[in-house]
Structures are given as structure tokens and as C-alpha cells.
Amino acid sequence: MPGYGIPKGRKGLLPWKWAEQRLKKSHNYWITTAGPDGSPHTMVVWGMWIDGGFYFSTGKGSRKARNLAQNPRCVVSTERADEAVIVEGEAGLTKDSPAIKFFSQYEKKYKWDMSQMQDEPIYRVTPRKAFGLYEKKFQASATRWKFPSR
Image 1 (spheres, one colour):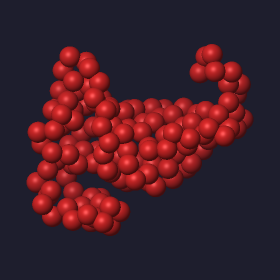
Image 2 (image 1 turned 30 degrees about the vertical axis):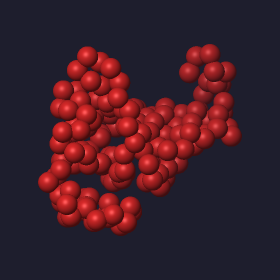
Image 3 (image 1 turned 30 degrees about the horizontal axis):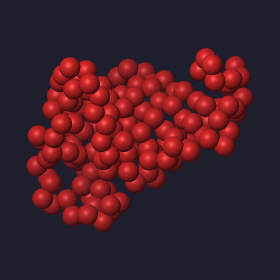
């Protein structure tokens, strides 16, 4: 991270487990998509980190859904800036399954009945790159992770 005074080397870097804990515990997430003209659109969503991916649902006609249909690249961030995790990835449509249990896990986490939303799309954001920023130890711990393309 040129210009931030961060030392070279791996000493003090955050483990991926640190990032996954925050991705699982976050209540609100920020998602940024790009419109057809490239303009950014950021919105708060509820979702869950399950088996290495971020899952969320949105209305079929929402701006997020329309943007992702044109360009699946997006950014998902946790709610806390002092222990931030930012994931750059690609969103793809998926379906609920016994392995994922999206609707039941969602209802448990948010205490909100999803029965009326079962026809809305579910997206899985597959990470390509992620960043971890821990404010108290920023200069020694700012971390970037890269993921292989699938």
C-alpha cells in the first residue's frame, strides 16, 4: 500500500480466520455494484458468509439485481470500519439447498420471516481479492488476500 507507511514483509499481517470471523458476525453489509454506464451504486444489505462466499437476496427489479445482471463484479464490506473487511468478487445467481440452508439461516440470524421472499433471487459473491484493516494496528496489520479464479 504505497504511501501509507506500511512495512514490507508478512510480520503482523491478519490471518484469513480474522476476516472470516468478521464476515460471519457482521449484521449489516455494504454492497457496491456498477450501473451500465459504470456509475457506482452502494446499498446496505443483510446477508451471510457461508463456506467461503457471501450470500444475499434482493428484489428481482432492484437496482442491485439489474446492475449485477449487466456486470457481476461487486464489492462487499462489513459494517465496522475499525475492523473492516472488504471483499472484491463476482456475484452469481444460486439456489437454496440443504447444504446452504440460506432461508433458514437468514431467518435465524435476522429474526425475520423469509417465507414471502422465496421467489426472489439469491446471489453468492465469490471473492477474488479481500482486504483487512484493523484500526488499532493499521500500519502493522493491513492485509490483502488473493483467491484463485474458479
